[in-house]
Image (cartoon, rainbow, N blue to C red):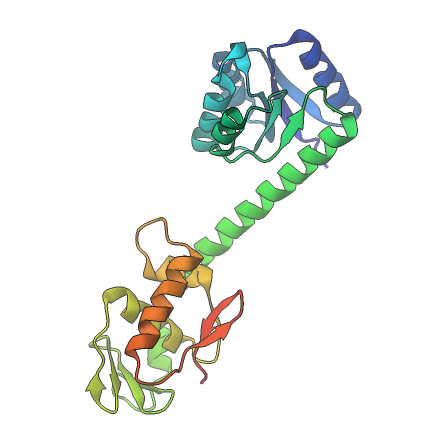
Length: 249
């Protein structure tokens, strides 16, 4: 297995040297040692490391925090802060950059190793989750096929629950042949549930299919379901605690 490749960004020579020696002793490959943000950006671009260790207080300022934002937004790499600060304001600013860990000075080698391993694992899991969501986006292209496969006749009608039906061609839902007035998002979520009758629609699937814009959360889905339940004549949407929702087939 390839050694994880790490860039160190630390302007204290002794700390930087100790970090370098400790990381190499623990089996990491140190591909860059920098003492300022400009040098670090160049080194990251050239070496494409697996992780970056960043001193929060580069040049006795917040340059480390600004560098971390670039690492996150431009390079999409995990990073760990190295800090001797306990100031709440500094920590709050650092938290906004969503670091993968903190190492307090003077660092302890075993704690350093554990923090790096956790950061790399968390980053890999997040990337896997993003790939899964991408697959869900591809699956959504088949939603119409799923709906048409559930028809009980040649008409574009899917009957579900008791006395409900979805007109696929009109994208309208009816109860006892009376149209239910739904918003665009409510209608999209109900179509998703009907397309997968008897199966759980996860929060991720709902957020991906219903919300075209970014920023939707699990609470967004819960609020949508609450509104939808208030509009449906009967309670047909079931909870799958912590996972999502479904309608029985």
